[in-house]
Length: 445
Image 1 (cartoon, one colour):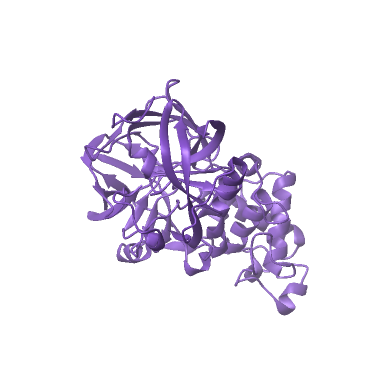
Image 2 (cartoon, one colour):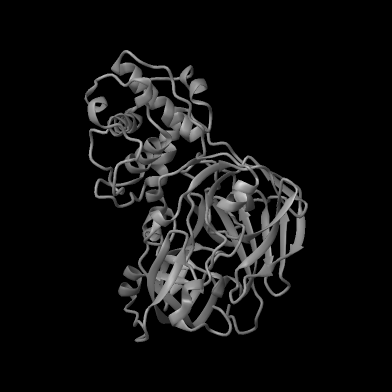
């Protein structure tokens, strides 16, 4: 929590956490010359699913196909229908893709080259069919289904490659406890926020243009599921394969990043360094010394708080509130204030403070939140008392299957040693551990 406490009426600089999921992969899709039969159209749809997941050129994937199992067939059927423009908007999306074919082309039984699936159609179908219920809500087994689709297609996620070790100083975001670090790209230095709650690294649109990066647009509707805010269409997300990023003496290549606007408040940064970069190392943070170390990776330890991967970020169920629990929370150095979901606050019977609500800013726009106070908040054996938190509704909570977000108001009270397990089927760690050491005497064990 900021010190001194900000005016709750002007809390627009505090965001929960932006979620950039690993389901979005940049890819340049080239039209395939498949015409003459519905079978060719189905093959084209399957090719685009695999190419989108793997990052491989679509024409290379075409020569490596096998018969599609059921889940893949569902995605294929969705891509065909959405590409022809003869089906309603998908669950979770407010309108059809702008490049869906309509009119006379929709009546054809054969999909000509110009009606082949596009990146936007493929992204929408994979997200909607694999990860959403028909009513648009996120499936609790979304991550498992995405891994299943990966196995069915035989596609493999490109994995970042990290090397080196480093220890350096970080700066804090003015008026907050968010950390800024110097990141070098193509021999140019930029200021990035350090964010364990972001699965993918984010780069500002202006910086991407400056670096002459080439990417592919992503559907803004997807941002409503993976980023805090109720106005995702205010952003224009673009998917990139990023050049190597350097932080101190460490370097990570083959990162899949997302282009968004990050230079405006409350972010005011050139980008956001996500867990795709940080999980290549052991991450050690010492808040009082303003010191950050990236060390050679080691195995998670039993004495630490157990972490579980959820769509590219780390959650834990070792959270107790007011003596009750355990509850599942995202651990997020990119969130200023710890925030509980409204359903959890109702189950706990929390009283919301009578003062006016506050606005929380995320990459997807604004949401409304209210203050409340917890008698106690425990992370495994570490316990805080009389702690103020925010209560809010966010689609991100449902997407990740969490009850809330542990932010910097809590994490900055501890020295932290993050360890990450080996990447799973989606190319991101599926488990890890976090050791905490209080930096103040009044934090109880």
